[in-house]
Image (cartoon, rainbow, N blue to C red; front, side, top):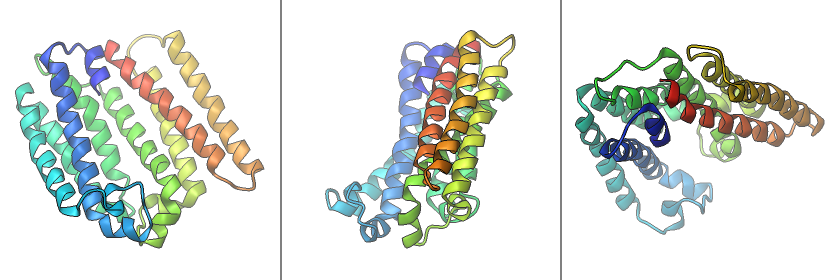
Length: 253
């Protein structure tokens, strides 16, 4: 989002302001998640989690999550009322994923909304508060939805053992791989063909790469007796393509 802000025209203190405001949403959702899931992470043996491993207390992480959450609207206010509201909504929907939506079939909704609002915040925070292009908001939402399914894939087994049943768990590894691929491909096409004017050569290359990589990942998965790792890697490649397209889309906002 900071690189998108630079491409969109933010300068000076505003670049740091975007970095801090968006960063606060990430710290908020991450710390609150670890506070809520401390017992579940211990049962799952998540030694990569500081609370579960005993590196930091649950109370400390919970307090840090509360401070980060309360800081979000204040960090958005220097840009004006509407940017502050947008970045606050990002934080609210991120926290709604932590609880209670993560364990429901609506688990993808916070990702769709929050990721769509993030680029909207970057654009509305510009001087004069211009309206964000619809294609940019849609691309952010699609990228967020795809990221949700891709992000959960490695943790499906651990989540199932501890009672987490979000939409990816309902669809399973294959269904989640397909959902991630479709959403990320849609994000790619939106970022390439959404802006006014003909797509650049880089845009065409990105679209072609996504169209080729995803079927190859699917084919490799079917040849590997249903193992989802090949499809997961293909999805990650397309996600990286989408992130690069999103960053450079600031130039055409």
